[in-house]
Image 1 (cartoon, rainbow, N blue to C red):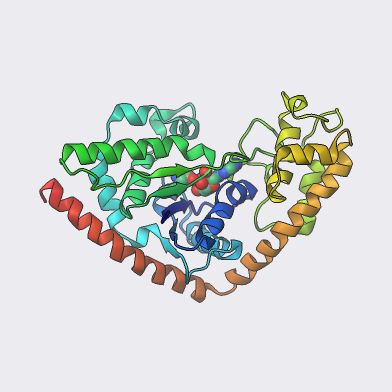
Image 2: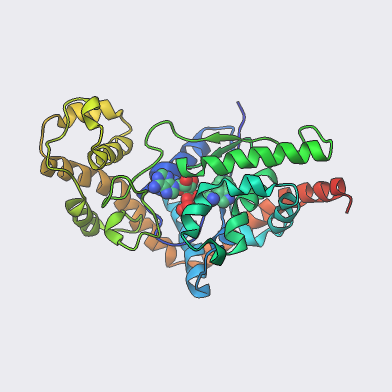
Length: 333
Ligand code: AMP
Ligand code: TRP
């Protein structure tokens, strides 16, 4: 079936293994599946929902673009673009925020996590963030949205918003209700320091994640220091319960090797962590080192990266400006 794919990644620095295994690896597979039309967005409007240093933001926009390309997204096959360069995203987000209900947004767990204890001090943008995300997707009539497990709730909201707009304005199927594409396996990579915490860009400890810009030595060191437990590796799947660190590391290994968790368990059954960690590091270095080198090479050519974003944003703008024009007419503008 022909699929229109849309996804976005925030340019907030420290793109890591979780972003790769949970999302970007999947983007590349979808692009390489002939017949799919793919659009990948560097979502800088989302990034500013928490305070950013302007110089850092500019650098991170280029770094995210370089990461997409280094991971295998081909700008001649897919559209790679920058959200703030296409005005329709902000316009559609406003219209959709007037359709969305406060009760729906109040249920979003990511806001609760990100806003922390002092919700009164969080930005309004952080609260309405999922409405902007819905605008991103709906402007392109995307049929499928590949994301990591943490974005599931936002995609359900996007579906509700699309249906409410279509109902309110009596236009069946005007906004396409998209399907989430969340990998069944390994869709949530956890911190190397705590198996029940998500691997995250914003974790203050760099040892908690493998960054896509890490070199061989950094990867070796992080895996060496990764948290484990005192038992040997399990002999059976059921013995992984309540061993979140072992489960996460075996999951990372399986995902890198594109094999089932059961296969990895059989491979290391009863062995100690030091032997497993050696093999895990090798698998990580095989995958991440070439990406890391390519990102660094691309970052040396800012003109090239800027030209990719300009070209992609022009293409995206053609699609999005047509849709927002129709939306405005429906609203009565
Ligand atoms: P973000 O960095 O929040 O813009 O996320 C970009 C993409 O990476 C989204 O599809 C997320 O769901 C995915 N992602 C982020 N962190 C993880 C993680 N720890 N495990 C799996 N996927 C993740
Ligand atoms: N909210 C997503 C995240 O933090 C990023 C994102 C913004 C996105 N717009 C999107 C993902 C549209 C998919 C589709 O990971």
